[in-house]
Image (cartoon, rainbow, N blue to C red; front, side, top):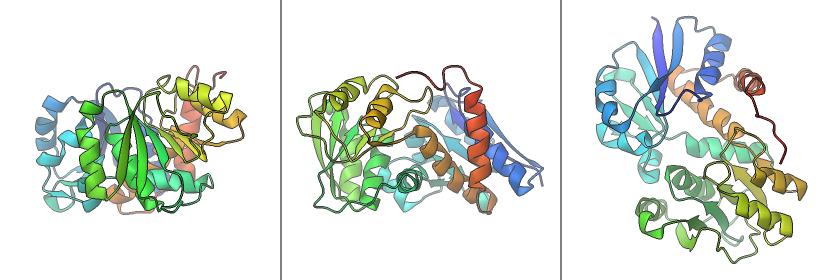
Length: 284
């Protein structure tokens, strides 16, 4: 039976997900499968879900749909419930089930780069941003053995969802104003903000005011970001959003197809696509 899947968001035309998933289907010999990008806003999500019949294997979701989808699901996996967001929906057995693959994807991307788990005694990681991806970062840090983090946000009054997720995850969080972090920053630094928003932290690294154990920047285009370039120049491991994207897409493929994801084929296709996009590799 021909099966369909898609990534939803708005805007969504830039998404690499169709390239990664289509490459996986090709490598797995799933000739009847298709994966597309569908522009969908929060108000349009309920109707779109209602239209997903037996020929739909699953959906990938971007913000703000990761949170908006939760009340529309029949089942929510414990991790997605704790994080407060599902980036994946499957339809097996006619039930809408929500999953979060951002967390295992982030852990896998860091592990691939050689970033070792840190215990509770380590200096807290610094997370930039307070949205859904920051919540996944908290869960990832918990998976790496941490029990606390510092989170830099522009508006602490809008951090309620983050603090609620931290409470569910058993993570202690210290909020700080964006750009005013006073520590030496020797823990991990995870940036969940758009390209350019973390430039002041790149300046800190260049001055030696901040020396993180490793940097994970969820941006993948253009690459490297100023933050990643500053880290690389300082001899600090820098993990890209592309690595995260590939590693979160792999469990999505497995959830939707029931087969092991062909990671190498997905990575190769994604890199080839990025190489053809203008300004992917840019000067710091």
